[in-house]
Length: 574
Image 1 (tube, rainbow, N blue to C red):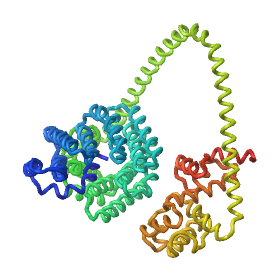
Image 2 (image 1 turned 180 degrees about the vertical axis):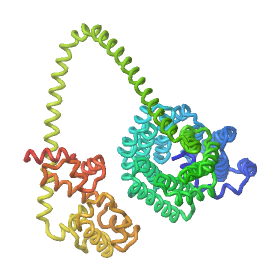
Image 3 (image 1 turned 30 degrees about the horizontal axis):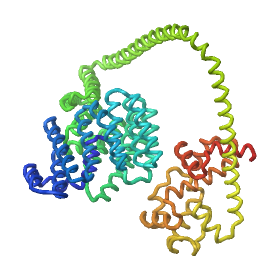
Image 4 (image 1 turned 120 degrees about the vertical axis):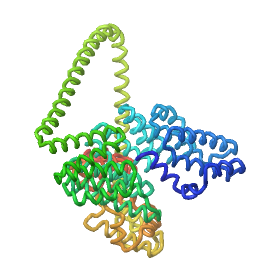
């Protein structure tokens, strides 16, 4: 997601009040006011500049205002708005393409956000930090940073941080032109945000990017499915906010335009061109012009196609990817116009040959470098041989100690796992022997039974709703479906999401997602015992876990033992 767009969403509560006030008036109000009012006027003034920051002069003014704003915050001895200022400052440098400045400022601001536990700010800055590396072409550092962000978010159980890290990984691999990894991390991101409404913007962009990938693969039905999911999410968000979000619709129209053009549905594509033209904006007008050029080319109206592609070239702003699309289409149109389609085919073939030649040359250079490296490595090994001999005996001694420690640790781990396994089995045995009322209570908290009990937490209506929920989830093992939709449960149970979530929490003490995951882990444990020939990946998939990493984490959190360790103990017949 573009940083400016993300920031506008963060600042949405203030934008409605900032616009009617002029900059000069706000400066006077700042000078004449004190305390909380002065801070509010600073927020409004910086938001006006932020919305208008289209050139370096205005961005410089905005940065100066942020410095004055933070100085006023320090003078008043408060921390309010400080996280917002820190993030916006980094975002300004990101939008100015000063990525070295982002990399320089990010660590200090991350420490600030972590110290004050402002995790939304923390992960937003981290995202810009990672983005700065890959936009500089330092993909290795970007991947390391995104994985570190993921590990931090996982350790602290921050769902938004996990989603942002996965989305960043997908974006990095997309920039590296590695679609398989990009698609993998987008799907993991969608799994992570499935029940997280508060991070809908990440979900929205994931739908867009996944649909675009599927269009490139020619998987048009799947692309349409995720485009429709994106449209449904857009309508839901606008309903919740009671406000229109034009950028979401613009993304949807561009996506639908690409999809219909790829399928050759020119009439439907023309409708989305009209939508984009009416919306305005350089990107929308570029996509509309390029779309009309493709439509005219399909209809063999080559002069009209040439006019539209030239219009698109003027709107390309010299951006490499836009230029590439325009030039390729223009060559195709010119070839058709002059009746030399063979020339276009030769041009495409020449491009492939040129790319192949460059790759061959690159591989040859890499082989040469590798050969030199191996020669230097052999010489270095000879120089180190004598020194290595002197350390050999000490190394053997250390190896013996390390081996002993490893054996001791391995036995300790086995004993611990054996104890956990026996404890789990003992709990299973005791659960079967409990009296009916006690068993219903415990099994509803760790789901198995379906009856309502007056001694259970929650009121009778909540107990009855949770009982019906459990019946539905257990019917045909619906809980093992990885795509169990919240709306589907609401429709089946004839309730609303708020009452459903409150009832599950009141009766079981767990969230809906935790409750479903607990049923899945119980089923996974049963399958690990009954099907020793099944792989853990197969069992995780059969129980409804779309990501093996998620299965391992949830299983370990519940039983304090990993699925592989549990199976090992079961096979040992402990």
